[in-house]
Length: 306
Picture 1: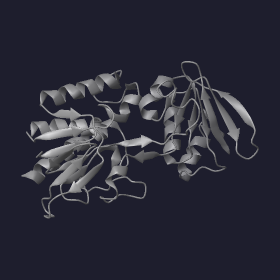
Picture 2: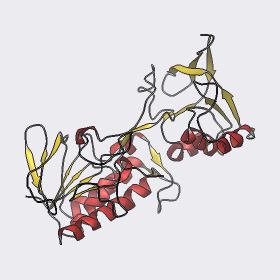
Picture 3: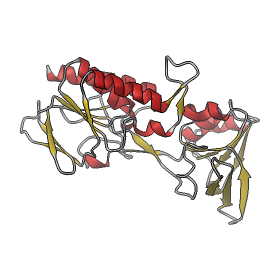
Picture 4: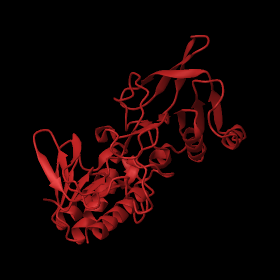
């Protein structure tokens, strides 16, 4: 019987584990991929407090892992298939956490499974990920200073990231598949007055190419079906993110896109289950906010178990 099982070993889950270990909670972390989560796909993080000039994400996650080891918490690389309530009490339920060939029992759970960026699904995208293809302007923007980049998307986040990236890049081409942007009008007004930003509308990316890094994209106009090549050194894709919450099978209250809805203390709609990081509905998806939420989630669990 565990006091706490944390599902996910990204920044939120690892920070929750660090605090849980210091609370001396009997804790297990289950992670289906690798320690660090999605952030490891960005080679460097430059906006994490305490590291002027930035730090490689792998080194940062290695430091997180070392702290987890110091408080004696084990990480098992296993994918959670299902969470099953096993007690009839609604105030202090007990849960079974099922993996492929084993089940763990716990008094509480923290969901920290994160979210994955939606991909375009075009040739070259996966091969050049981390080598010019990015899904995080805040993470990777400074790496493209004075370079020419393409941003794909038409919603608020795409335009916000385009504005941010224009402070680094020499030229930003914003590519959108529709005739008009879906973003708020004030954002559209801002990008239209920015001399570093130009637009290619009614168009989609068909291929991202380059030998060892991004060199160009093949784009197609959806109205004329004409294709053209656009030279660039980076492609930033902002066509939405998808929370990694499918395994919950509607057990918790979520929004229409699957993000978990929580209270201020990160409680979910089920007693004893908490959520933190990018799998929960919020306004800012960053490593620093994920860490803060991980600490708060562990604190809330500790109070819950008293």
